[in-house]
Structure formats: C-alpha cells, structure tokens
Length: 454
Image (cartoon, rainbow, N blue to C red; front, side):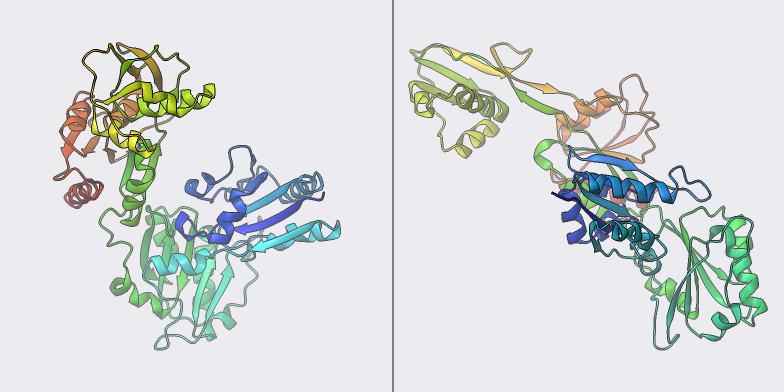
C-alpha cells in the first residue's frame, strides 16, 4: 500500500490557532517532519510511536537543506508511511511547500494540503492591527523580506509605495533597513507609521510602533530577533486602541504547572487563555502491582482511589469474577476511595468487627503494596519561570524530584490549599496560597501577583 504526505500548516505560534483538521492529521501520523517555529504544544499531539524528524531552520542556518527535506518526504512516503510535513504558519505563504509537492507529484506520490493561519495576518491581529480597514486602506499585501546571501531584495518599491495599502513583510529582520530606505526613496513619507511584531501570537510577543524612517534604528535599538514581521500602513495607528493581547492579565508570565493526572490540562489551558507561557511538568504516574488477595472473609481497607483501581486491575489481570469481592468487606478510608469504588458500580461496606483487616496501600507503606508512584525524570536546563502552580501534594512531590540537585531559588509558588502550601514552603519556595481551593482561584492569585510586579 502506498504512503501519503499531508502538508499541514501549524499556524503562527499559538498552539490554539492550529486547525482541527491539521491536528487530526498529526494525531494519525506515522512520520512527522517539522520546522523550528512549530510550538511545543502542537508537537505534544504527535503519536508516541511516530518517527519525529526535526528539519528546523534558523535565519542563515539550514542544517537540513531543502533538497534533503524533499528527499525525506519522498522516501518515507514511498516506504508506505503516512507522513505529516508540519510547517509554521501556512504551507504556501513563503514556506516552500510548493517545492516539496513538486517532487512528490513527479514521482506519483499521493499528497494533501491542510492550510494554516499565516503569521502575516495573525501576528498583526494579536498586535491590535487590522490588516484592512475601509477608513485607512484599500488592500493588503504580503511580501517576503528574505533575500539570497549577498544579494539585494528584488522589490518594486515605487509600486508598493503607490498602493495605499497595508504592506506586511515576512522574514525581514535583516532587511528592515533596506526596505525602509527603498520605500522612502520611492516617495513614502519617513513619518509613515509602521509596526514590528516579534514572536507573534506567542506569550513573549513584543510589539514596537515606529515610523518607516526609524525602523532600521529601532531594530538595532530594541535588539529585535527573528521571527518578526514588519507592517507598514496607517492601520498601525489603531494598535493602541485595539491591542487586546498585551492587556491579558498574565501576558508574558512563564509558569510551570505541576500537573496531576486528574486535573489533566485544565489549569494549563486556563493560564494560557490569559497570556501565560505554560510548561507542564511531567506528572508522576501510578502503576498497579501484582499481588495476592488474602483468603476471605477479610476487611479490605482502601485508603485512596489508587488502591481501588489497583484492586480492580488485579481482578482483571487474573481473570477473576468481580462477584468474588462479595466475600470481602470493602472499607473506604477516604472520600476519594469511595468515589473510585462507586465508579466501578460497587458500594463501600462497613467493617465487620469479627473479621481481620488488611490494608491495600502504596508501595512502602504498612499493608499489602498494590500500587506505586513513578516519579518523572529530573528536568534539564534552567528553570526559567516566574511561577510554579501546585494543585496537589503529588504535584509538589513530582516537582521536588524534577528539581533534584538544584536550588529553585525563591521561585514563587501558587498553591491551591494549606497542605500544598506547606509542602512547597519546605522546598524553599516563595509560597502564596489561593483564596479558595479551586483552579480558578489559583489562576486569579497568580494574575494579581503578576500585575503587582512593577
């Protein structure tokens, strides 16, 4: 059976801007060939068993040349694989997607294109700049600012200056000065408004409103780095009034979320929605152990939901009939254990005073060990965060293990309740407790702290 290549535009940076169709294709991929600017939150959707090939390019540094990328796509598809070529922005807006499809077409390889949101429009929107507005312009034009090494840009500046439209230049950090001079020489006033948007749609996005005459000096003065777009047009005058992104209460904050299994991504998504750059720490996971049940009649003491799950997993593993549990008293020591038992259609029992009691517990505790917690590996690199959020004690434990042999250095911890706060304080963290034991309250406390930073 022949393979297939799906060319997918991953969008401009914000993982939420990837299309539903693109994400669905990614989740079904056997091979993923991806670029540098694809957000880490999107890469998390790659299936665990898929082959991942990083062909990321930096400005002026192409470790995997384009002809090699084309060859990889062809060979993987000819091997019968379902290949996703994941490209930042849109596949066909200065992304060389057409070149990649040409080779596939020549060899009769099946392919599909899933368009993405281009940074040209999305970064402008996140900077409060509408690409078109009937009171300011009649058109919008997307232009590459990239040039071959040691060559000048081949642009018709006189035509661009006459358009009375919004000009959006991509891949142009190194050529802002040349573009500005060309437009001014073609008759555009030096005081004509323009904007530079760096890291568009990401929490670290930076917007600089300037003039065409000052653009080159602004790039040097503000140390603008790629990726950035250059927007020239009167619509830039609207940015101050329409900039919704910079007003988000956690815009630019870097947050580590110690994620427990039961909370999934809820807190992380809540924080991202208000502008935070979120890194979800690997969660500690649980593993059911193999054990033997004591001969009935016995009171089985269940301290938590993990013990309940391990008990039912053992019944399933051994092929036992669940009705055999009727010969035991299932005694729950916590609300969590009772809820877990009810999820399996079983009701907690009162202990029988004439029966012996046996506790089914976590490895290392007194009783029969039925489950154990496996902690994540230590983190690499710098912590690089403004906050860490804790919603459970297990999250604190996982964070402590991740930070082993490193001093968190007074990192601010926002905790859901007194127990997590005390555990975080014991790690030397600067602790703040949420007003209420809810994820919403954790987020609100963090927002208040971030707004007070200046």
